[in-house]
Image (tube, rainbow, N blue to C red):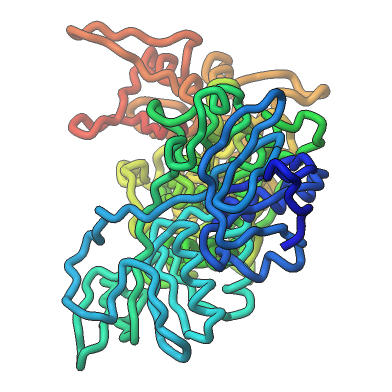
Amino acid sequence: MGGDGPISDGVRAAVYDLVIVGASAGGLSTAISSLRSGLERIRIIETSDHVAFPDLVGPNQLDIGFGEHATSVARHGEHLVVDTNRLSYRTRAVLVADRHDDRSWQPDIALPESDRIHLDRFDVGHDHDVLVVGASDHAVELTAQLASAGNRVVLAASGMDPSKLSPAGASVLRRLERDRQATLLYRSTPRHLTLVDGYPMADFGDRRTPDLQFDHVFFAPPRVMFTPADVGVTDDALASGKVWFIGDPGPDRPATTAPGWQVGIALAQACFPELDVAPVPSPLERRTRHVGAIEELRAEHYNATITHFEPTHSDLWVLRVRPDHGDTSYLPGQYASLGLGHWEERIDDAPDPDAEQRWDKLIRRSYSISSRMFDEYGYLSDDDGVGELEFYIVLVPPTEDNTPALTPRLALKRVGDRIYLGPKVAGRYTLNAVKDPAAEVVFFSTGTGEAPHNGMVVELLRKGHTGPIVSAVTVRKSADLGYADKHRELERRYPNYHYLPMPTREPDVPKRYLQDLIRDDDFAAMGVPLSPGSSHVFLCGNPAMIGLPEGDDGEVVYPEPVGVVQLLSERGFTLDRRNAPGNIHYEEYW
């Protein structure tokens, strides 16, 4: 198919840019990407009479020699010479893309004796219900071949990482799914195979996939890369760095070994410096092209819907989440966990090493539950009856020491998107210690540490608390006060409630911190006594603001700078501990 005829010495006259040994998924991928990058003469030699994906041959004008196998690869001057059972080729580089099945491999489940269960290729004809089990390019090849023969195919690909497929394999897989030529189960694999009336019955062992019966079941065994000896590569040719292999790199492998999804780029960069090679898309980008895989992950892990997403500004949001099932009752001050998958896109381009290793896992973080504060009629809200939870969340920026995982993904979500909500609320940072309706109750918070206090303030007012209630919050800018208008409304309605927002980076506002309210006796000036005998103080946010002491052998050491706990302790207040009740209650935010 194509190419120039042999000359008298058996070597084709023209010099090829690249000779590829094996029309596997990785071999076809490299041929196509190399042609698109600007190489003009590429020859694929294939031992059999077929290629992994026949539909890619014509549109890409691939030059393939069927029935050819390499017998040697040697170095001749600046070129390589590939000898086959038919011809010899001069070429600038060689890719050994052939791989053979691991004959020693066995599935990790017991298989009944049946001529309908196969560990190798087998011509089953057409119009059959077929299950293919595997998560590699090999499984995609089998699926495509069976589907093109007119069979109804299910691919059980539990554990498949689409970003580890060759570009051709990934493209064909997406086409099979898009054109409904195969049913893809990215998160399922059979746990048991039995015979019912002589036909294989697959038990997938999970609620997502029912038991299914098939005419045939194919397992796609792992493949073993060819060694240099398998194709007669000389030491001199191998040392040239121009003979590449598809496989997983390792200490006993040639240095010119790369997996199918990566080998095309690696070979081009090493052997064809004149090419302007497009960078490899990120693993996340390659995975998100496989809509079915992402949707299955979301269906498996997400159990709630975002019903409200209101940005205070671009980096600060109020959102509400409604679970599919279960109770949303909580005590004001408690927290719940939210989660998104590592597979979700980020709003930033920060390096995220965990995403590659844990791409199909959830990121979970705990957030204090906030409050709507008012219902749709303007009354104080009773959030127990609304069936959803409200959260107040800030986008955490990356630093040299920390790459936040959840909030950069949450930033791209909107109303109607799915999310994970933990099954239980928890926390002892509640109003349980406030027994006297005339007690002074003071809330100190930094930033979104105000979230639990919103519901706690509303709870006190709903219960008819008559003592002074003060909520003081420090933020950088006034725009960071997501609930300011609601707190001002509470002040208008309830003379015993005081809201003290304290922006620290506004040019017309003196910079003061929560500690200054205690040092400067602001509470006395407000007519609010702050007494260890009658007052409770709640602290939520930056640990430096709280300033919890450390100590051994009874010695108490407070951190620098001075925190609120030290200032209150010097006035006779005590920390509330699990086994030692006190009147300083705290919730650290990181």
